[in-house]
Length: 91
Length: 219
Image (cartoon, rainbow over all chains, first blue to last red; front, top):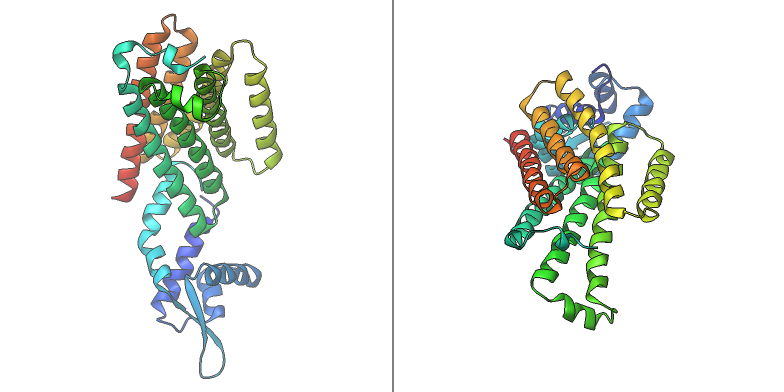
């Protein structure tokens, strides 16, 4: 598969946010997930909407993200969901 | 016209059990696909989920219709709903089954075509409904259309298996091949009672394969 599918991108972002333990900054996510600024904003909005991540501000008032319980649950179920999608060629 | 007329007497009741099994598996598949869509936003997963939801509703119609006939409750339903005859209750069952099933298959075909054009879906649905409802032999037209759609869907999943040789992709390809044989068998069958039983057995193997795939992806 040449193009990364949505489920892989979401999982990459969430795993990065998890590993940064509440200190993930938008620019770091953008580089780590290899996304354009526009795409990053779209995904961040979506993940905030789905309550997979939550936003907070650091000491310098910069935006940071941390994983919610729903986000941890997504990572735990990622392989199953991807396996399901792949078995029916839905990605 | 009702499925009951196709069923041999000794098979009464067993078919309802088979249909309950088909209903459960297709409903679980639909709900999981919709859950994955909600989590990931994958559009195809949504269409696939709605497709299986319609198929599960078709089985629910079929099993309720058959159950009403076997339990002789259809006479009471008829009186409560103020319907003219028992045949009306049975017709609602079989028409409900055919239209829901063909709609579900159209959605799965749409997913397998990987088309994002909603107009393709709409035209397939409209044509399928017109062909079935305007046909003189509606059951035959329904099985003919189902066989054509299932042939394309099975072909797609067979290609997917050849691209990704895994137990999961194989079980999905086999499931749709069983469903195809079950549907196609009606077109060449001279003994529709035998078809009814064989169709249910092939359906059982198809949904068993879907259940195996469900187990494999979740383990």
